[in-house]
Image (tube, rainbow, N blue to C red):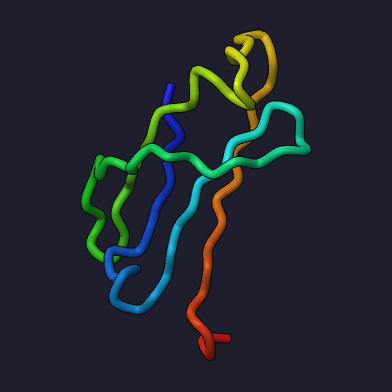
Length: 80
């Protein structure tokens, strides 16, 4: 199973940083260490994916539990 999202192709040039976080308990949201893989090129955007973690919070992830993903964008200063 993979988490898939769209990201701007020029994200590095304009200073956008995409960080994917996973949680099974809605309290701890550690960032994923996986490097997103480009799945498709969609002109201005690219579709990227990374695997859901097998282990979360130093424990094997129970398949029956709901896993939540958060996509965080860090914007460069002065962009807003």
